[in-house]
Image 1 (tube, rainbow, N blue to C red):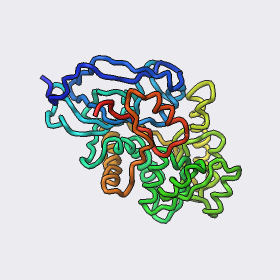
Image 2 (cartoon, rainbow, N blue to C red):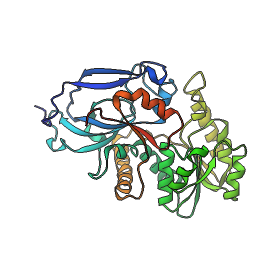
Image 3 (spheres, one colour):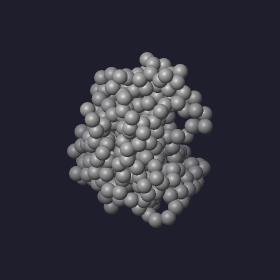
Image 4 (tube, rainbow, N blue to C red):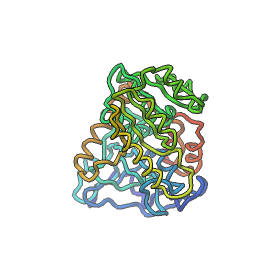
Length: 352
């Protein structure tokens, strides 16, 4: 018999389904039997799941390796274990964990492998913890494992008001790094409060504005935009600097293959990387190394634990743009795509 919490007698789960290429209003709310955890799995009552840029691409059919429609989106989640699979550790029941899922997180109950869980410190609110799961792992790894920033350096963060961007700014500032952050003017006060020097991303001569602040170039650029502007990002690097590309937002509304823009970007990055100019390029993929599951999970757990510790002590703060119940996911996705918010829109449990 599976161990379970007394209050989890529910026989059904609510989930948000992406049926095809639709506007946010086309998301569907469905109810199905609650999943049953298998051996090595637990059943998690989801308290918070985020809306990231990945889901925005998925609804357009533009995410590189998204599953076939229909499916349940949800790149990450935070929730409490309510049941363990056969032979599982009953001591896990009642404890709060985070998990990186890629899909499936927009649901009230989710079965997850125990190996995928990262414990959330008791003092952290679940919605706040959720904002630094995929965003925190991404930002930490790009800063410390790829760019290897050092105190006193200067970096450029595009989209400094976004979910990843706002986390990047805080982690870099905490590491003693000077940050220049691009955003729309309406977000400049928020970006400044995070510790960055804000610049208007629509500035016709943005490279000149960056050069005025960093005459010798910046030590790293974090670019989720891709497209033609990636050349400017590379050109702003100081010798020894690193361009970290982690998306192709500029092409999200272009028709055609979801893979072609990625292949084009990878080709440019590889060419620049091979040039004898003392500058490095890297395309960041959070799932890199997954073919060695134990190493992948250990690295992910170690990095997210570092970020949770900073959040727990107040060294960084959660940027929750809005908390919206799961059943109103269409409204939440539209808000996340509006470009009017700072931080991350979080889907929360429909019941307290």
